[in-house]
Length: 612
Image (cartoon, rainbow, N blue to C red; front, side):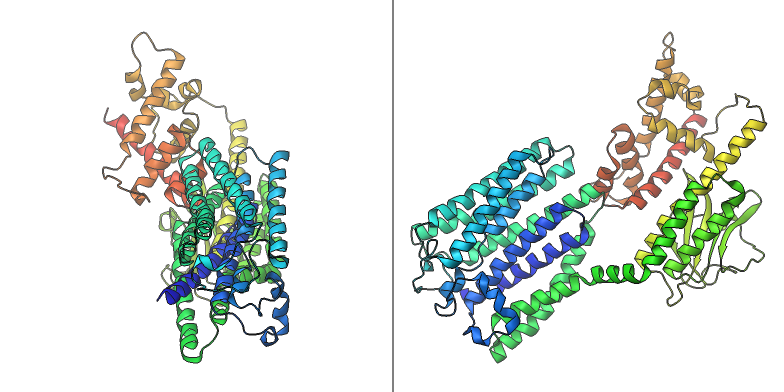
C-alpha cells in the first residue's frame, strides 16, 4: 500500500510541476521571474521523476535507445550496477533551491545590486559543485550498495560532506524566506502582499524537507519518502500559483478563472493518460518510467498547443499583421487631415479584414440625421433603414448569423466605437471566410484596431470643432448645466480626474449647481471652498451608486463593478491594474465598465440636482 501510494503521489506531483512550469512561462513569456520559476518547477519535477526511476530502475544501459544515453550523465557512474540506491543519488533538490533564491532577489522592489548578484552567483556555484561531487564522488552519499527499503529516508548512507551539503541548502532557504519577508514589508498593495505571503509559505513548506531529511538520517528514523513528496508538491503549487498571479498583477492581467480552468483541463488530461498507462503497467509490466514519460510528454504537447498556433500564425500572417500596424500608425498620425480621413480609415479597415479573414467590414458614424458610412471593405452600399439607436452597444457583441436585420444578415461581430463616454459609431464585420464566428484572438485584434479607429475619429472631430470655434465667437453659457447629456458626462469625468484639485473643481460647470451652493457655508464662499463643495457632492453621488447587497467574499458580483471602479480609481487613487486584479477583469472590460459608470454618475448628479 505504501508503494502504490508513493508511486501515485509522485506521478501526480510530477504532472502538476511540469504543467505549472509550462503555464507560467507561456502566459508571461517576457518575464525573467516567470522563466526562472518555470526552471525551478521543472527542476523539482526532475526530482520526482528521479525517484520514480529509483522505484523501478532500468535493468541495463544497453536497453536504452541511443538518444537517451546523454541523460545518464545526470546520475552517478555505475547507476545500473548499484540498483535503486545509486538512482536515488541522482537529481537532487539543490538546483531548484538556488534558482528560487535568485527569484526572491528579483522580487525585491529595489532591484538587483552588486551584493545581490554575488549571492546569486554563489548559490549557482554551490549547486554546480554539488552536482559534480554527487555524480563523481561518494562524499555526499556512500557508494556502498544500499540495504533496506527504497520508500524510506534511512536507505542512503551520508558521506563526509553531507552536513555541508544540507547546511548550504538550508542557508539559502533562509535567505529566500528573508528576501520574501522584506518584500512583503515594502509591498504597496494588498494583492501584491497576498501573493508574496503565499510564496513565503511555499518556501517554508519546501524548506522543511531539508531539516526533516537530515534529522531522519541522523537519528535513523525510517520516515517514508512520500512525506517529502507531499511537502514539495504543496509548495510547488503555492509557488506556481503565487508567481502566476504576481506576474499577472504586474502585467495588469487577471488569471484566476483561466488558471483553474487550465488546472482542471490538465488534471482530466493527465488522468486519462494515467489510466491508460497504469493499465499497461499492471497488465503488461510496463516500466513506471514509461508511464511517467508518457504523462510528461502529453502535458508538454497540450500546454504548448497555443504557443505553437501563435508561432505559426506569426509565421504565416506576419506580413498581414505588419501591414495592419503600419496602417494604424498612419491613421493616428494623419487623423487631422480631415479631407483624407475616410481614405485612411478604409485602408486600415481593409488591412484588419485581411488579417482576420472577414468577408466584409464597414464603419458607421452616428449622426443626428442617421448613420454615416465613413469606411468600407467589400461592402455594397445600399439604402439603410436602421438608426443609430439600433446599433448602440456598451460592449463588443458576437452576433449569430442572420440575427441582424438586412443588409447585415452575414454580420457576426459588432464593435462600438467610443470617444470618452459617448458612442460615436460602430464597426460591423461580416463572418470569417471559413467559419461562422471569429476566434478569440481575432476578436482581440479587432478590438485593438477599433480603439485606434475611434481615437482617429475623435481627433478629427476635435479638429473640426476647433475650426468652427475659430469662425464663431465663443459665448459663455449661463444656463443651468444639464448633467445627463453626453457632453456634460465629459465634464463629470474631468472633475473625477481632478477630484483633489479644488481650484480646478471650482471652475467647472458643476460649481454652479444648487447642490454645491447648499454645501457652501455662509461667509466661506471662497474659490477653494466652492471646489471642496464640488468634491463633496461628487463623493456623495458615488456613494449613492453603492449596491444594497452585501459582499461576503471575492470575486465581487458584477453589480458592484461601477461603484468599485469609481470609488477606488478616483476617491482612493488606486492604480487601474490593481482594480483590474481585484475584480478579475481585463483592461478592455475595465475601460468599458468605467465609461458606463461615469455616465451613471452623471445621471445620479442630475437626479440629485432635479430633486433638490
